[in-house]
Length: 246
Image (cartoon, rainbow, N blue to C red; front, side, top):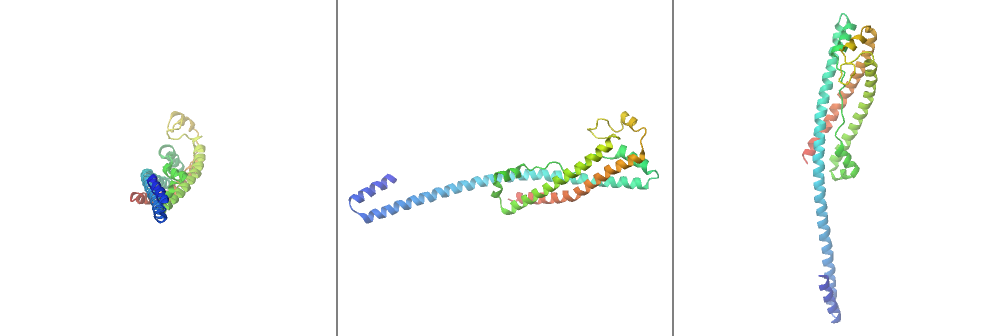
């Protein structure tokens, strides 16, 4: 095409047909511009198609992550609620008991659940990839705001978990050094023969003090999670619903 127009220009110059030469020159420029615009349009279309596919892929991954988190949050909240009610029941029994220290000792040795409820690691890989690559900007601003708000709340939850866990661990270690507990990872199991020997000269008063500190730390942990988990669950499910509508 370019060679064709060049030959026409050369012929017109030789024939001294300047006006027609100018028209052909303008026509050639217009065609070049149109070609560039078409190429840009095709490039934009291809880029938009790629972005659409990327958004769809990210959306699927986010939905998968959030669905797992939603289930975990529901289970964690259920456990914390049940555990809190269990502690209230123990308190009531001790308060009504004729021999409260004996009742407390029996509860601690045979009934108390030493496992701690709360939050495990959340599924944040997709969000972290979005922020690190800058692809978060591909989403609508409303979704970006929801993702950012959820990430901030998740960070608060993680800080709370680390703080309460350190306190709980200190009290758990203080208690278990003297009184073996019924947990899977304990070397000396509660209720074993070694446990019986260790408890031969137990002080009920001393035991009550250590156990009280342990349970109080757990109650505070549960109290924090009873606030954080519902808020985290609400934001997670709201974002999950919005992403499923995309």
